[in-house]
Length: 158
Image (cartoon, rainbow, N blue to C red; front, side, top):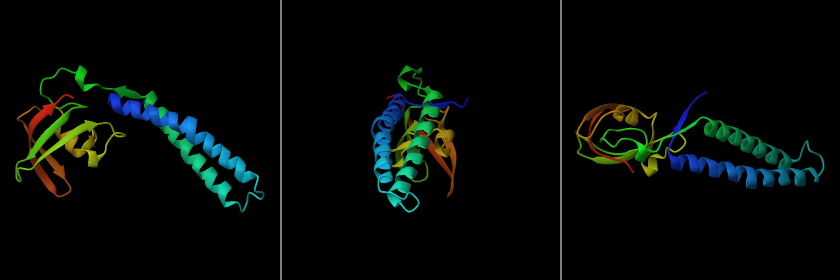
């Protein structure tokens, strides 16, 4: 069985999405299908086909979330030994050694990743290059524009 690392917040968000899909979206889609059936000929009924397509997407997402929750490995960074090392769930402040630009990222699971919110996936090149390193260490990370060297300024266990 595949394991899916996630933070407690990410796990709670998936559970909430699953609840929404099962208790609100699924019944709404079922009602839309029933209403569209009442309009007659299903071959040329666009409302019916759209509702069935929505139902397919909803059911697929439910199966996907259930599989991920079933294989979830919830990792709480607050319960890890806080030694200043970069591990899953921490927030890390890094500095580009060429430009001296600092960035702050939280390392999260794939479903939680949101680059605009500075949450990067554990599977991203930046996170893979930082995992296991400590404050003050340097990390060379391969990016699409070439290799970039960063210094780990701070590791926050939040």
